[in-house]
Image 1: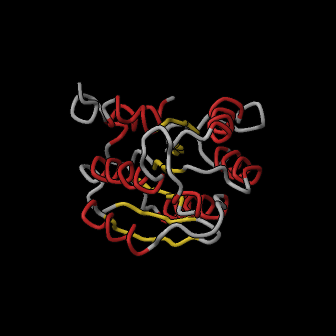
Image 2: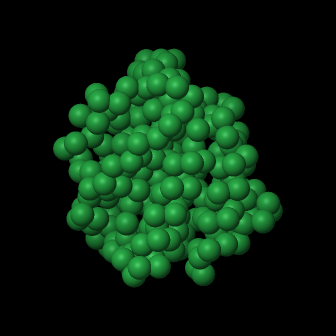
Image 3: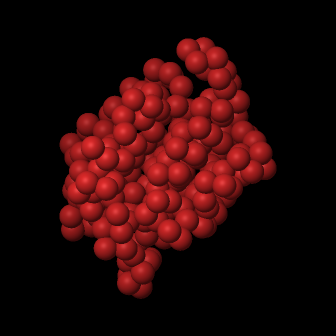
Length: 210
C-alpha cells in the first residue's frame, strides 16, 4: 500500500522543509557503502524531494548548513544536483540556528494564515554530530510547546552513514525529549538504509504520527 494514495491525508496538504548537512565531514568516505557521505546525502535528498513535490506543488524549502547556513525556497528535484555542486562540504556542523529559522518561518506563516491545513514536516539529513546538540534539543522542546496537536509540526532526522556516536545521539532525541520537558514527541529519527527498505511515504507518515 502507498500511504500517499491510500488514506495518507496527514502527509498531503502539508509543507515540507529540508535541512541538509554540508559540513566538511560529509566529504568523508562511508566504509560500509564505499560512497562519500555527500553522495549518500544527495541520494537521500533527491528521494525525499521527489516524493514531497508530488503533493507540495510550490516546491520545497531547503537549507544547507555547516558553520553558517543558506536557505532556498521553491526547490524541485531538478535543482538538487546543481545545488550540491554549488555548495560543497565546508566547516563544522551547527544545526540549532537553521532549525530555529525553519521553525520560526513556520510559526510566522501560521500567524499570517499562510500555512497548509496539516502543518509542516522538517527533515534534517545529516551524517555528523552537531557541535550545538544541547541547543538543538532546546529548540525542539520549545517548538513543541507552541503547538496544540502533535501532528502539526514534525521533525524527522535522517542519518546517512554509520557514525555510531551520531546514532546514539539521535536515539536520545527520538526517545527522551518529553522527559526533558517537550510538550509532544515531535521528533522522529531514521537511517537512510531504512528509507531504502521502506516505502518513502510510510517514512513521511511515521515522522508525523510516531
